[in-house]
Length: 201
Image (cartoon, rainbow, N blue to C red; front, side):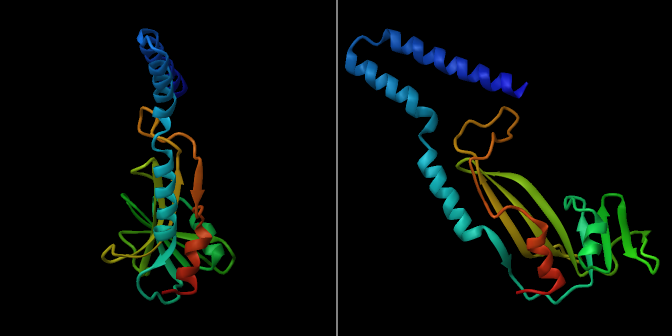
């Protein structure tokens, strides 16, 4: 469906400029019209790419805004899609998974199995992990983040940010960008978890 929509837009664009080109009489104007038709879809590429590089340099990667002591317990929001068992394996003793329905507390017991307990809200975690994906920015760039926030107030204290540049202003009709042309700081959990496990800031 999306491919058909993109194809339709491309055909309409070509048809429009073909119509214009046929009605231009002089050779210089025909050349000028052809140049405009070819350049128009790509006019923002240089600015967009430079803006993408600037964002990578200034805002990409790991940023910690306050000192974080090593943590044994962690809260994760539903947006942070990693399975709690993986975080237990990474080194946390207790993982508190929070969503709209409440909180589930995970811990590994003596026989190696994982115990789950339903509670109203996180009780043992000072910090909570969350994620944002595909936040659309100007100049055809999207932003993805892993965030560490205080469980009590939701104040962000650390983030790992990735940017993706999509190469032009031709976004798909539903607002989703087309394929990535360039990206920086691929979003990986092992970039943010050490901040909590070992401390940072």
